[in-house]
Amino acid sequence: GAGVSQSPSNKVTEKGKDVELRCDPISGHTALYWYRQSLGQGLEFLIYFQGNSAPDKSGLPSDRFSAERTGGSVSTLTIQRTQQEDSAVYLCASSLGPAPYEQYFGPGTRLTVT
Amino acid sequence: DAKTTQPNSMESNEEEPVHLPCNHSTISGTDYIHWYRQLPSQGPEYVIHGLTSNVNNRMASLAIAEDRKSSTLILHRATLRDAAVYYCILSPNQGGKLIFGQGTELSVKP
Image (tube, rainbow over all chains, first blue to last red; front, side, top):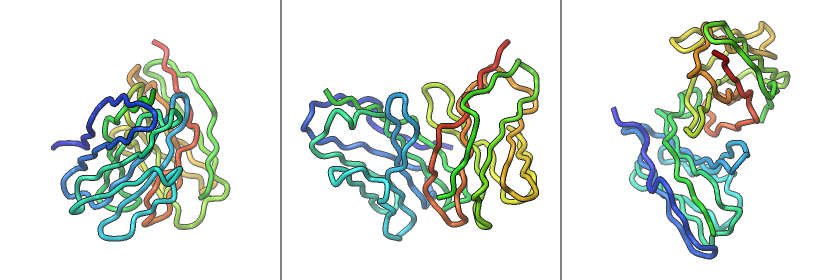
């Protein structure tokens, strides 16, 4: 079946602009995650949605970052007033439920802030 | 979150077994041990997970120490496609986020 999809695959934006990144999880997966990976850095957790529960936002680096998940399916990660340090690959993952269910990752969105 | 310690890098020859170690001395009773890998220019992919008993699947085996303070991911016959960064991660039951460390970069020589 279809895996996790993300759009756009690449995004170049100017410093100070807002961007929206989209994630389509695997159908039926109740859990959805956002991570990011900066050049040469490890994978960093951002936010986690599980069903109708309040999301775990503990990884969001600043209040410029927000995410929503509509109808328990598609999710959008929004970065306001982008900064150069926001440049990274943003990865979305989904799973049937919380751990220990395995997470399936999408191909990522490469964000470049100029 | 309990931490894991892995070697920064390891080398293997093609078609030989590879044992990737992970130490997690502060693991709690409800923590699962997960392994993911990230091939170059791709998102991470799940490899295997376990709680107390050794586990086998089509990709690999996971050997868990009796005291659960360490584990070893075993690739039975390394191929060039197995060259990747391997992450050992602890996650509590019903937990969500994965906290990735630096992982072990495995290179496979033909």
